[in-house]
Length: 66
Image (cartoon, rainbow, N blue to C red; front, side, top):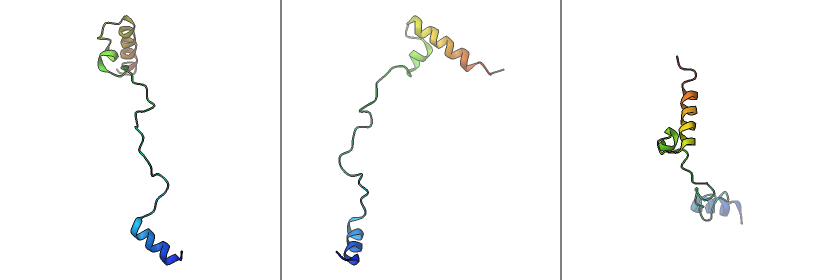
């Protein structure tokens, strides 16, 4: 191929940088958790350890407030 053929090919097809192929699910390797849901953060779902953790989170959040 000559440079003109390469240039024409790029104009017609664009440039590929090797990211082609099938798209993977972005959540495929993640662990599903309830730890960030509001009831667990506030300790409202009844678990004693969750209530204690919520107490510690609240203390940490209020640590530098006057």
